[in-house]
Amino acid sequence: MSDSVELSTVDLRILRLLQNDARISNKDLAAAVGIAPSTCLDRVNRLRETGVIIGQRAEVDAAKLGRPLEALLFVQVRPHRRALVDSFVEHLLALPEVRAVYHLTGPDDFLAHVATASATELQRLVLDELTARDEVARVHTNLVFQHWSGGPLLPPG
Image 1 (cartoon, rainbow, N blue to C red):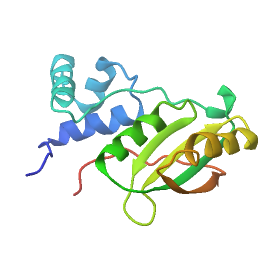
Image 2 (cartoon, rainbow, N blue to C red):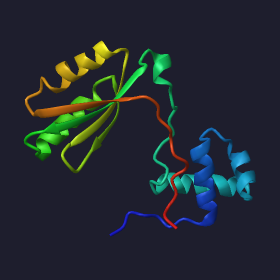
Image 3 (cartoon, rainbow, N blue to C red):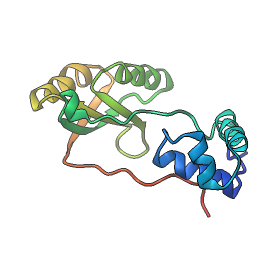
């Protein structure tokens, strides 16, 4: 069973525009896709109600918040069991340095994107918050030099 939602070409244009600028006014969005503002608002609300649009977020510059050093932490946990996975993810998400967490397949179980004030703070994070935990078998750290975001996400085809 698929969780996908059937979307019209107008819905897709709305999604593309909102992903590029979530602050666009409904009036400007409606004009850009060629429909009435009331129709546009109904379509956006339907996209929210069906879970296609799951939120709006402010994108922040970690360096300007005093966290210029970003890293990807590949973490292996043992044993890899549901109760342990859930508590480990909760622990990671409670850390102020953590920007995103991914549960993976392959040799590593998790990928955590973190932002810290310095290499010393990154070391403290790895040693005190990760490898000090009994379930953490290994942490591999890669520093992020630069990152880019992709364009709007749309369905295949």
